[in-house]
Image (cartoon, rainbow, N blue to C red):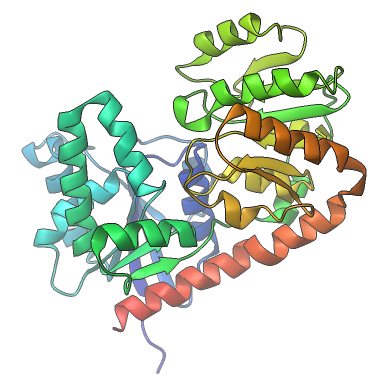
Length: 375
């Protein structure tokens, strides 16, 4: 007699266009329904990927009612868990904190799995700049949540090493990369969107300190001395946009850099680019870079905390700057530009499919979840 499907409740603040949102959507969509019965709990009732979920996924919204428990995320989450009785709760982003606290009152048989979105040490360091109180509270609750979890998904070996040092153990740390459906990426959006510049560079990301656009612009200024017709198109918006536009003017890059703002379909521009570039200070697993590889576009990334060094195959699918610093990035960019003719875009796509296909990654999730439930 076949076993009943494992009931798994995924928890994420929203299912919109963010990187973790896309990963959650891929897993929710592709799980084997003969073995798993997925449901989802979110804080926001709308979102790009939320509206595209398969119809068999039950969606719960925290705070959707007017009772006292709906005002407090931990209590609201517990109410959902006690009603659905999942075998596993899978939490990411700030839901790690909510469900980590809630796990103190989970049903005895319910397991907790968490997925950290960024390098933990770098995340904590970024919080220090905002508020020491917020940093200390977040660190305390995060580490407590990690310790209570039955399993932790790390997006890279680097993240596994980082968390292993913080927690003092590695036995429940599972390395699972982010998934990408190369065939879907190939079909989505316009096939080509011409970009200015010879060569044409593109970058996609939130205009914030983490993504290092303030490091990328000086690197572009340096590279332009050797490649005067180079042009960078930046797709994305964020809190640092005004400061970055001012820096671009200060560096004399008005004709060499375009701030295009948020673009609903960036893939057409990424396909058209000669190179995808991103000078992040730290990462989890940069989905924008993964999408570039799925388009066959070579990439230049920084060797920063996170998965970058495990994504880039130097000379095959791009180059890795030795550190998150303008001079180092300019050197890596110059090398990649000199190699442009040697990059095989079909081979880049094939390697991306082989290492990061949705089927391969979702199978890894299925194996990990099953192992946790039957431990």
